[in-house]
Image (cartoon, each protein chain N blue to C red):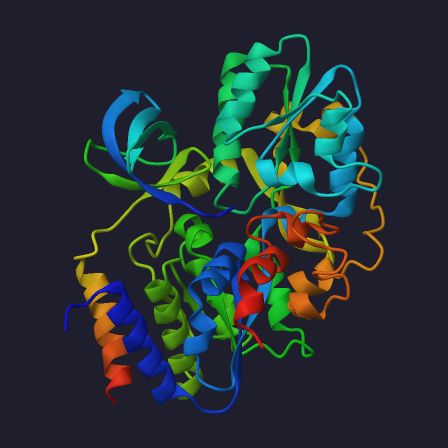
Amino acid sequence: MCLAIPHTIVSISGHKSAIGRAGTVEVEVRTDLLENLSVGDIVLVHAGFAIEKLMSEEASEIEALWDTIRAFAEQ
Amino acid sequence: MKDTSANRVRLAARALEKLAGRPIKIMEVCGTHTVSIYRSGLRALLPEGFQLVSGPGCPVCVTSQGSIDTLVRLSGKEEIAIATYGDMVRVPGASLSLAQARAQGAAVHVVLSAAEALSLARKLQGKTVVFAGVGFETTAPATAAVVLEAERDGQENFLVLNLHKTVPAVLRILASDPELGLDGFLLPGHVSTILGLEPYRALAADHGMPCVVAGFEPDQVMAGLALLAAQRATGRFSVQSAYPQGVRPGGNERAKALLSLVFEESGAAWRGLGNLPGSGLTFREPYTRFDARVRLGLEDRETPEPAGCRCGDVLAGRIAPSDCPLFGVTCTPEEPVGPCMVSSEGSCAAAYRFGRRQVP
């Protein structure tokens, strides 16, 4: 139940709502829990509410994590 | 070699092999992790002696039998409509499940969000809608947001039976259980999206428990397990995140502010674990008019769990699903006895659907 599905924001539909797309499905997403959402942001949606903006897979934090794991694997 | 998810899984598996030492027992706290691990067959990649046990992170499963029976009882009242997330309706009650009550004419509505429950209250003006507020910190902020909306709109026929629970307190109890003998926690990704890393610090500092937040893709789970093994190998225990994609170190400040505006910490009744102090949420004073317990004068009555059902022991990591004598015999996803076989993220349902082909 704590699953959250990434959705891309395709439009801002209200003060506390936006339209999010996952695959080919578009749904209304409540945005009460996030500030400064923009069209194109990818958000995690849980039980109809966006709970966080998803960081790009290219982010340096993710690269650093896998560098650490690579170092363990190659030690 | 391109850094695909499959390559990353293999890389983390190699890291686990290199870090393997004495046997290690890790609890994956979140039911969604349990399902992901079973579905992807990751256990086959773990080194010998690396054991995973499922924890209490399935909100429907940890909802006490008394709470299920309270909902069923309420559903029998003409003036009440129940709004609940889907898995709750199939959990057997002492006499009926909510689904069976609905078949007998009770107004039981499955909703996908707390906002939908409030919309239902707007439509059903002749009834009082009681929303079964289950879920951990991932879900509770949405309930808080909707309560604020109900207050703003003066929606008097909307109540919440607050069954929300919080994760860090129950982990402190499990960490200090010598019989369990855990060596670390794979922490829930999306609970941590809200909480951040700070609330787990005491687990590492005071209980000597390695703690790593992980996402739900196979490579994200394996990254979490590799970091846990590394903490065990070095003896330096801390709270780390292997899920930077979805978790900021400070969590979601706005969601946390909403939570503490509407709710305060309380004890909560957990199936199999009893009443645990500091592990639940209750309404703060200005919002108690939305509290179904207050408005309907409900008392928390504990009722016995189904005879022979070992869900409580499964949730506490004390036994594996297949150790329950009912598992796969009289308790199946089609005819569940306990909630761990009902919920899509229950350990027993996951073990039944995916596990029997992999685990000897």
